[in-house]
Image (cartoon, rainbow, N blue to C red):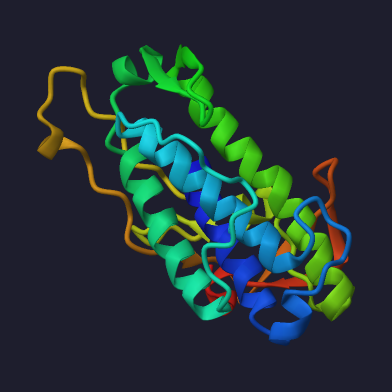
Length: 222
């Protein structure tokens, strides 16, 4: 589920950020990576770095503040590709592989070994951490009313199984049995069925706030 949530949240965030003028995107607002553009680039840099490690490679010398794309449209296109790759990777894993170790080296060359599910948990948590910073910068630029809600509960409550059920979260693809061929993995859903034109926003405690409507995921490119 977290791979799909990650893709959904990034889609909404980028749809909102696309409304901001290029000079404002690149303006240093005192965030950890300076600007909104810098923050979004950092997430792409680190996702690519971890994706390389998941594929068995450990690049050296990666700069975490590298700006891969100065043009927002190019950055957005790269983000879409990266999120798609992550969804495909996660839903191609077996339970056995998730429990096994991933051996990798840091950017400085220090060797590490951790359970794969720990690494994936870090990857998604890191996304949420810096996406929150980016979300704040979007709010400063556009105002609160134009800043999308990214709560996990909002995602769960605003999507339904692709089969056409009227409520409930997306049913993720099943992990393939450990003895199954890679081609036997159940493919991920290709789209979401939104229950209503507007999804309800939830606060941190899980309570629905009826005073604010959240555009449904597809309306913001999620």
